[in-house]
Length: 67
Image (cartoon, rainbow, N blue to C red; front, side, top):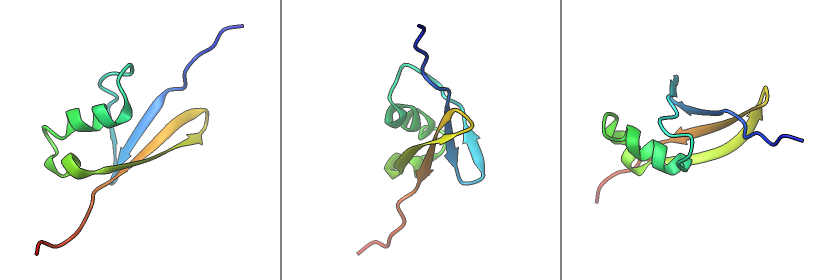
């Protein structure tokens, strides 16, 4: 019996982010993307949800006001 890990899909807004390092945690991959998408620096990761045999994570930014 062979055990495989599902493919990870990372969704942010209307985009699918590349899984830059499948061995890293989802939070670490989102931090890597924060270098080019600063809003991800404080984002929250939800999931995974199973979509067609793939682990799908949704990234949501934290919106708020200063003060």
